[in-house]
Image 1: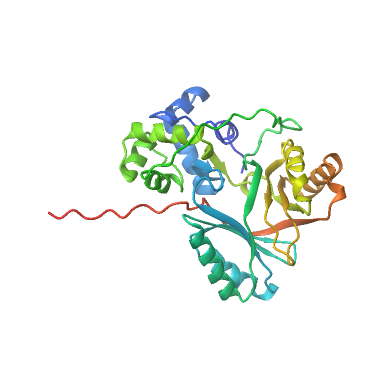
Image 2: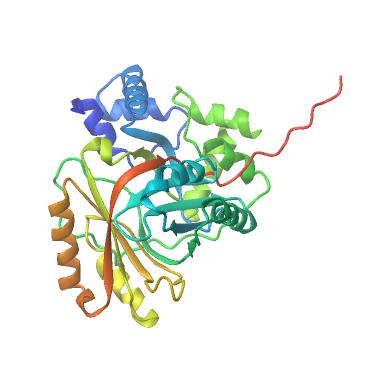
Amino acid sequence: MNPSDLELHLLNDFQRGFPLTPMPFREIAVRLGAAETDVLAALRQMQDSGAVSRVGAVFRPHRVGASTLAALSVPPERLEEVARVVSGYPEVNHNYEREHRYNLWFVVTAPEEARVRQVLGEIEQASGSGVLYLPMLEDYHIDLGFDLTGKGGHSRDTARRVSAVAFQSRPEDRDLIAAIQSGLPLTARPYAEVGLRAGLSEEQVIRRLTEMQQGDVIKRLGIVVRHHELGFRANAMAVWDVPDEAVAEMGRCVSRYDFITLCYRRQRQLPAWRYNFYCMVHGRDRDSVEHNIALLRRECGLDAFPHDLLFSTRRFKQCGARYAEPARKEAIAA
């Protein structure tokens, strides 16, 4: 894909900070010196082509619903068959083949932990393989934003963090989250349309999404891109076995680098899986990913710990997570 100037600005400048105003696409158009109809048309075209996954919210893990990373060791001749079973679950939003004995990696997200466990049990039974259950314990950086201009700095400052305000969930949040989890509608007044789905006014939707951002429930609001379609064709999950008391320090160091999209601590599953510290590195080719991981190992002192590197080789599924199901609306008798 060779994006036009408008497409490039949309993709690069609005992955976060999406306007929480009644007519957000008009506001974006004014900022870019474009027509609102052209902004909407460009976003629809990029969504149709696969460059854009959705325009919407990225939720912070465990602030909404329950989720886990999981993996299977599948015989190569059964990989596609098992991958189809795994991808068939609506609760699975990412499903990748990686270079490792554990070769199928997926994320399960559901409104409740009990449903996550149920899905994992069913997948384990269907695949005939033991599932690695690797829930997140602490996150250091979760973004999945990409600089498409090549002008990003070498490292990011993680010292300044805005403290989240206290957030209290409300019963109506379930319907609101269900209405936006697959993305905002690409219409002139998207929050009004979301409100119709969730039983809220446009003003209530904007106010509540603002509160979710301030409360660190929504990590970012904006255009969610698909990295492979935009030229980031190599990615690897690097994992280390770090003493638990040292993980936070490693996380602070690794998260400084602008080529890191994800960095967190996960539960080990001994004896099958010893690793507890993870980061994701995306690049335009394999060499650049390997170079950046070597840089991390050298500059953050990670060479001292056992590690492994798992490159992705095939994407079976990538979509937004399902955190909530809308409440059933009872029919009103005439």
